[in-house]
Picture 1: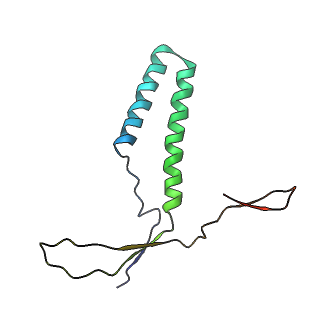
Picture 2: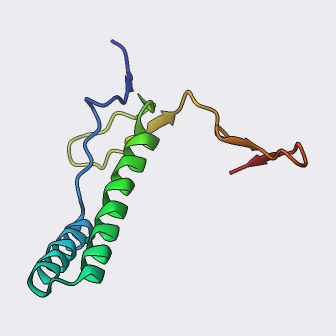
Picture 3: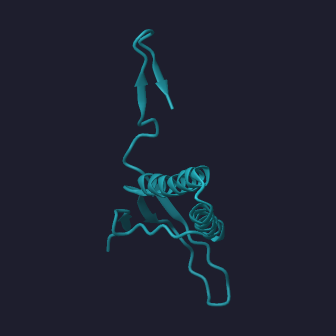
Amino acid sequence: MDDTITLSHRRIFILPTKRGGGMVLLIVILLLIAFVYNNNLAYLLTFLIASVFFITILHTFKSMAGLVVQAGQTKAVFAVRRQVLIFILTTPMPLNARIYRLNSANRKVFF
């Protein structure tokens, strides 16, 4: 039995928390205010917050895609005892995957 799972687009589900639900509610209320008062600044603020919300979801997906989840060593316990589950997360990408070069100084800058 293979104990490793590689997270792909079929295994990643990003669900909003209470704060995320509050942000969706805020976006809906701001959109209704923008409709009623026909205010362009309200439209701007609504679509700016909505775009940040969706970009955050995309960045979360991008950072989770490709992770490898493995089961760690656990001890045998009885039903009334607490069990500690150990998961090992590894990524095939290096930690400093983004390297930008500056043309004038020819130095590497890590972000």
